[in-house]
Amino acid sequence: MANNLTALPAREPARPRPAVAERKPSPRVKSPGREHKLGATARSFAILEHVAKSRAPIDVLDIIASLKLPKATAYRLVDWFVGHGYLSREPGRRRLIIGPRLTELAFGALSSSMRNDTPHVVLQRLVNTLNETCNIGTLLNGEVVYLDRVEAEHWPLRLHYTSGSRVPLHCSAIGKLYLALAPSARRKRLLQSLELRKFTENTIGDSIQLDAELRQIRKEQVSFDREEYLMGVVCMAVPVMGRNGELLSALAIQAPEARMSVQTARRHLPALRNAANELAEIFQAKA
Amino acid sequence: MANNLTALPAREPARPRPAVAERKPSPRVKSPGREHKLGATARSFAILEHVAKSRAPIDVLDIIASLKLPKATAYRLVDWFVGHGYLSREPGRRRLIIGPRLTELAFGALSSSMRNDTPHVVLQRLVNTLNETCNIGTLLNGEVVYLDRVEAEHWPLRLHYTSGSRVPLHCSAIGKLYLALAPSARRKRLLQSLELRKFTENTIGDSIQLDAELRQIRKEQVSFDREEYLMGVVCMAVPVMGRNGELLSALAIQAPEARMSVQTARRHLPALRNAANELAEIFQAKA
DNA sequence: ATACTGGTCTCATTGAGTGAGACTTTGTCA
DNA sequence: TGACAAAGTCTCACTCAATGAGACCAGTAT
Image 1 (tube, protein in one colour):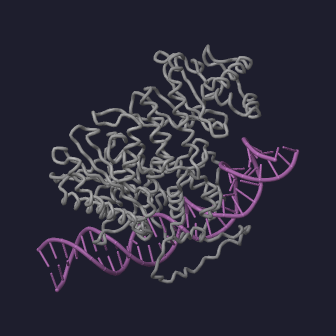
Image 2: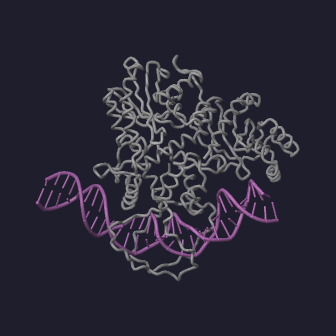
């Protein structure tokens, strides 16, 4: 966990007064990767996390030391927290403990995440049962992105947020599923902007064939990736449908073909369908 | 809760440019009630609180409306939260839920506040009276986790952070309590995804039986684990209820059956109930 | 096409936040 | 009791991070 708190501008030693002012002519380069700073807020959370993590009441100097905050700043922030009930001081008016407001927030957060985190739990359970990697994915900007992903075998359930990786639509189970089940207007547009590039010998390369495949998918409500993107990787995806038949997202299982042929995958279909239904219900929590 | 978020300066409609600058001659009167603003931070917490409080995933527009934040600002903050894991987005890339980082913080905050604040004292007292191990637990990601735990006999009041240990819902007193008292929609979901694995001969193995048990629990507001998970271990759990009947957490006593039969446990019920009430009050301290 | 609705981006403006350091209070040791 | 250090507060010049109005840009619905 990179702790960039110190990395604030590192102000100069406060020169007495440098004339009046030199208007910088706004050198704002149109940097595309706009990152927001929220410096104070970041520090605030760091402090809370520090207090929450520590086993015993903590004093401000600890915070200053651990987080490398300047004294004045640390006291200022802590004061604010105390004043707003997020932190409290122990009887001796010194060491800090979690305040009532934060406790309240914590309760809320926990029960909220109890309610809403369930997608992940469902996924996790599915993976435990089938013992293969599964993921929940959706379409975003014409690409498949994974919303959550639980890897089999190894615990470290790494969340692959695959921000960068472009998974083309025409050669991934989830992508084809979306193509197949999108309302026709949308499908048309998506198809139009597809370039049916070949990745393996199995990749679908012409639109006639793709069309047939999509029809099949629509009929069966399952989509397969038979080593169409990566040789040796097989994938099966089912839709997570909303009440009105909208496609909320897709649930997929993925494994090396050595371990899971398309045949084998089909055997997992009931389990996937089941999980997909659970997910559908969860996603449709009412306000 | 006074909602002063709107009370930020209320910027003027951006006058083109008002000459260069008029140095205010520092009218800083030595105001004694120095108030720090921390505007961004305040707003940040307001957002988190809002999300945590709402029972369903919330969308940014709700936030904007409820908190009267300017659109751009709200999106900026939310983005930051999502980027830093405090909030997450649901499938449709729209509604917001509590993120992993906030869950972690919440958990830390709660157990920290258990330890330092009165909850721990209450628990301790209970243990001293009954002379058996007691713990406060909750449900997190479909598992039972202990927020605080005081062991009898041995001093070392170890806090079981049970990061790894999965305590299944259907065969633990706290788990069944949660199952029984959850709102019916959630109960349904939880039950659906339960695998009634047998751990001992007493483990409840079929859903009919479980259903009966849950009804009983709901009626009596106590839940027992009669050696259903570990042979020789008996457990009894009572709810800690909020003002509106929400389940805040659960309080349980645990002992070897040799020392505490279910009968004996029942005798401790009044003491547990009492402590649970105390806890309820503590948890609902007003800001 | 046409009108929404949800969301992103830009950018001038400025006040919120900053932090070195002086200062005050509290605690400790002789 | 004084004297010294450590903990905590306050000041203030400086500036950059946050702000928010509004233009803009998808998608979706009509």
